[in-house]
Length: 365
Ligand code: NAD
Image 1 (cartoon, protein in one colour):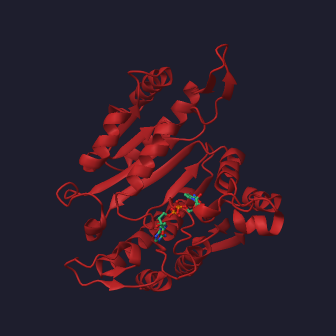
Image 2 (cartoon, helix red, strand yellow):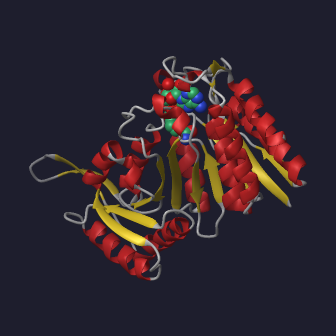
């Protein structure tokens, strides 16, 4: 197979973990006789230094001519956000990409591996039966894209409003994605809304139910968002696929992202209706650890596995990477973010490159 991949390492730990993911890509290409052409491009602060833009035309052109995008992370230290280089860096980079490619669904797999139960903020008792879910978030509707207004009324009171809009095709598209994903898993979709209050949620519920009838082999459950937030913390094992709106998905997916104990573990994908995708870790540029060689490369490597599976249909290759990650963790290798001294198994603290070395060793055999 011959494919072009746009590689956007970005800022902070982005380039460090991307280097390791590209080593994995090279090994997979060699082992399975694929040709992956890597087209690097600047984004975020790194792009600003060169082009005075967080998402320059050159980067846009490269992304448009590739088969998938592997993204690192962007942004500077939280204390430097006032500097031109970092001002709106994340929004300018990520929202531009979302708009350009009309990414309509975000997929966030959340898994707590048995080896890492000790680093989860949840009690062992709560997660003992395992956690393995995907949060599917609609990306183009809701109040994020409706009209935003601030005005003064006739009493001279300042008023603000954000219009939340959903059309039935937006809901149907993302619902089909969720049901299709469930088919290859536990065959259960939990649709999350606020249908007891919001009109958009009432339409959401109606349309999801209609789409559910086209997928009779999948169990559909409805849940209010406030309950879902609680259930993610007290009983996350019950979920297979969570399907939800843009704003609820924003909040729930970040809540779920911390359940495994570090942002350095999970992958995330944004897909459009044509199946074109961007794959990235859920965390940011981690300025607190950037340049120290200690960032966890697993989230970036998992993002690569997800890209191979969803964009190129390379299931065997993706599984091999995921098994290699699990193998390295099972054998006790830990970067600092997931190092827990009280673990009963013998663990060894390693840096970014050494963790990738352990993963590569298990892919190469
Ligand atoms: P962050 O996600 O960068 O870091 C939060 C915590 O998680 C830090 O302690 C960090 O060290 C840790 N962490 C994250 N990834 C890790 C990894 N791979 N290995 C080990 N530890 C890891 O969030 P922040 O510090 O609030 O934001 C820093 C910058 O990142 C900001 O400029 C923010 O705007 C940006 N940001 C970008 C994205 C993105 O690129 N998609 C997402 C979130 C935040």
